[in-house]
Image (tube, rainbow, N blue to C red; front, side, top):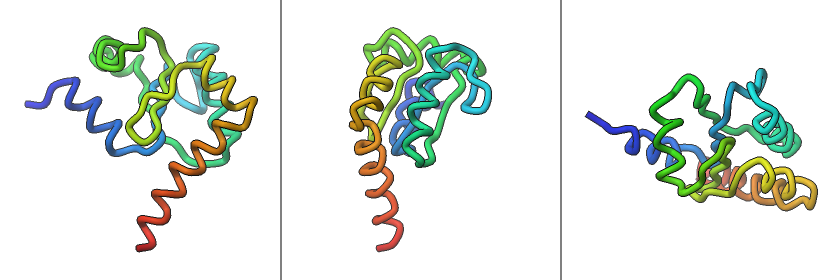
Length: 113
C-alpha cells in the first residue's frame, strides 16, 4: 500500500509543473490560489494541479514533506518554487515565465527524441 508521501513524491516526479492549490484552476477556492493560477496561466503553458480540499491526506502531509506551511505550493521539475507571494513576484519580474517555459520546453524536447 502506498503512503501519502509516496503519492506526493510520485505527483511531483511525474509533473514538470505542479500546483497544489485549494480548488481547481477554473474555480479556485481561495484568493491565494486564484492569484497563483492567474500568474501560471499568464505563462501560456499547461500545468498540473492537485486540489488539496479533495485530498485531506495530502493537505496534511505536504507541508511537512515540503517544509512549507501554506498553500498554494508550486513545484517545477521536482523543486519547490514557493507559495503565492513568490509566484506572483516571479510573474511580475518575468522569472516565472522563463522557469515554466524552460521546464515545459525540456519536456517537449524529450518527447521529440
